[in-house]
Every structure is written in structure tokens, then in C-alpha cells.
Amino acid sequence: MSAPQRFVAVAERNVAVKALVRPGTAASRTQRLRDAGVIITEVDMNDIPAITKSVTGATTVVSALQGLRGVILGVQGRLLEASVAAKVQRFIPSDYSLDFTKCDPGTNRNLDLRREFHAKLDASGIKWTMCLNDGTELCIFGSADQKFDYTTIPDTAAYTAAVAADSNPTPKFLRIAGSSVNAKDLAAIVTKVRGEQGEEDKVFPPWQGMQYLENMVSGKGKLDPIDNDRYPDLEWTTVEKGIIEADAEKNKSD
Image (tube, rainbow, N blue to C red):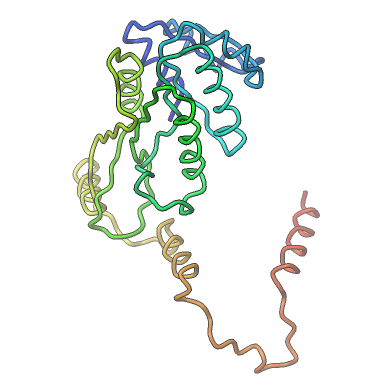
């Protein structure tokens, strides 16, 4: 989700907004925020006392951090620690996603990091709320009848702003959806809006690649038996050798 849209939406509610940015952030990246009246503060996100000073007086801290473990648990963890030290009332983590509370641990690496961060939130004692908005852009694979939730970035930003500005207690999990549709619904909507009928005229569309990969990783397409020995004079290239050769070829072109 776009961080500027989120903070601009809060500012539009006549709420004082301060955006923490890393030292040296280009002014062009924050101009839209400045135009909306957002106060820009440069802070070293490794310096907890400095972060604490920057968020002191805030009622809600909204995280816009995206990344892997070092960011979600590391940097966001320091932001959380500083928020607790500054006695901030509410923390909103950057969990703008599908409802991973219903997904099995281990099925999505990035969302597992979010789940792990929730343990930090619970242990911190701070009140926290996350806004689950499911998808914004889709490459569909699976049942054509399965409903999925679709929410635009501006709508998610507006809702997050409402939560941030809410003086009332908010639950930990808030779920929003601009639309709930399945693949058939989506095809009908696109046809209606654009006046175009979809056709299967591409040999390798993205979804076909997903189908092929599923066939592979499910084991259903595993080759068995293997008939390599039929022609014993052939020498087979292993994965390791293939990678070495591909890297060598790439280095030549670089």
C-alpha cells in the first residue's frame, strides 16, 4: 500500500500528522506529504531514543514499513518499542493483506513474519489494530467460483486514516472489502466496463505458468519412471552444473 496516500488520508481528517523518514530521503519523495500539511521528520530507525522522541505526543503510530525479517521484526520492532516508551495509545502494523489468521503457518513466508510480529505486539501491552484488505491486484489461480476480496489503495488508506483518528477503542482485527467477487464475476465486470470479451489466445499467459508450477510442486507431474538409461552414451547435465554454466554465460554478456 502506498504510504503517502495513507498519511495524506489521515491529514485530510484534520488530524496533525508527522511522517518519520530515513535521513537523506529525497525531498521529491515527501513533497506530496508536505503539500498535505504533513510534518516530515528525519530519524535514524536504528536509534530507539530518537524514534521515541519523534513519536512522543502521538496517539497512534501507523507503520508503513515493508520488507523481510530485518524490517518487519527489526525496524518495525524498534518503532514498536519506541511507541511503547513514548506511551502511544495505539499501534497499526503494516499488515495490509488477506486474512492470514485463517491461513496455516508456513504457507506464506511474508505473512509468517507478520504473524511473528503480532506476538511482539501482544507482549508489548500496547493497544493495536490491523486493517486486513486482501488484494489490490490479482493473477487468478484456483476455483473460478471462489470469492475473493478486492480493496483499492485509496479506500484502504481512507479506512486506515479513520482508524488512526478514532478516539474510541478499536479491535485488533478489522476486515474491509470494496468488493467480493469470483473469477467469473471479474470476467463479466471487465467485459461490461471495457466492452471486450476475453479470449484464450495467448500460449503462455501468467495463469498458465501458475497452473504448470502447481502441477510440478504437487508431485502429480513427476516423471516416473525415468528412461535416461535407454541411451547410455548420453551425459546428463545436473542442476548444479546447469547453474554454473548459466552463470558463466551471463558473466560473459555482462
